[in-house]
Image (spheres, rainbow, N blue to C red):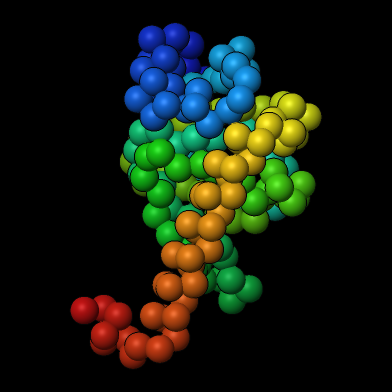
Length: 156
C-alpha cells in the first residue's frame, strides 16, 4: 500500500462517488488516498483492521482460505464498495482476504476514527446497513445457486 498525496485525485474520487453524502459530519480531515498494486492484498485474514476503505478505482476479489489449503472465492468488488464494514461493526480482526486484481485506489479512514466518531453517525450507519444487506442477499443467492444446481449448469 502506498499513501498518495494528491489532493486533486482525492477530491475527484470524493466528488465522483459523493462520499461526503455518506456522513453527517465533515470527513475531509480524516480521509487518505491509498494505492494498491495489482496482486497486492488490501486486507489479509486474521490481521487487525487499520483502515476502513472505500474502493474507488480498480477491481478486487474477496476470498477465504480453507483448511485443506484451497481458496474459496466469495465475490468481486468494483467501485464504489466499502471494505471493512463487518470488522468495524463486530470490532473483530479481518475475516477475508481482499486482493487487488487490477491497480486499485481506495479512500481510507483510520479504523479508530471510524470506531470513535462515525459509529455514532446515523447516516453512516444507515449506509453500512444498506451495504451489509446487499452483501447478505447476494451471498444468499450465490450460495443457493451453488447448492441447488449441478456444476455444468453453474459453469454455463
